[in-house]
Image: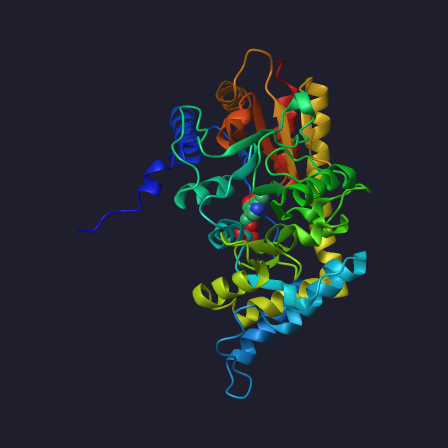
Length: 410
Ligand code: PLP
């Protein structure tokens, strides 16, 4: 008899976004003239840079002619893109990453979700809390997480709280953990780690034999000095860290799909007999078995991100979003709300007013300001009492939403 993978049955329903939609629809039905502004969106809104679009068009035209047509490409990605990444994202910052250590993919979501496959079943997984849900749920599906309690906390995972009390800086775990997911700049809190703070984690991983899975999808939003753009800026990280990057949030590729994962040559993990194995070789084996590469035009489009014109245009878009973030921060300040983030990330993490939980604050903003955000409890138990706004709306809508919030009294 066929049976299902029962680990899937342990997943909590992805209640948060359906519940948001239900409440917004209900509100709009009762208030047909309401002009609701969505400040919860995690998707970019600005179009692809023109340098990217031109390269994309040229590559599509190549596909139309027998002499230039491209079929299957290398599963790891074309050398032209891997070399451009090694040069522009790493060598230019004094970081050593070779093109052979870079694996092109169609998203950091897939890569952060799939990476756990190359690790043993018994590894203890640690996540920061609140968290990007993919790290948690991919381990639930794999059977490493066990059942969840009523707050959504899975019994088999180690949660590292990031709250106002610790300045959103994750404390090193007291118990032994094997795989540690870190995302900096962080979604959802919008906070970043300094080089010194990240170095503590790298040192911990080196001492304890654990591996850090470092998601740097929001690296391009870093504005301040002293915040590492790559974990490999920290000494010793090549021996303990995998890094995930994406073209989604820096260059508007959310609908185009291109990302990459760096697995350094030095990364080795033992099997149960104590024999060491190269993680790069295991990831290569996984990718060549299950993945057939990103389309040629998309990789040419991604390559164009590194042209001077591409760089100028992506900087312009990031500046646009970060201006929205600045407006949000200033408005929250004048409304008397406590908030975090929005300086090195497009996310602003609001502390809900005294006595109000995440959903009560959601309802208040919806009813009184017609503004929609995301209740922090949707990102993990420690997200309760917080609320996420994003800088990804238009400037006009951001200004209007913030004017409305400024008029409320908390
Ligand atoms: N990692 C984090 C922390 C994210 O917030 C997101 C998207 O919101 C992703 C990864 C997904 O990136 P991609 O579009 O490359 O799959």
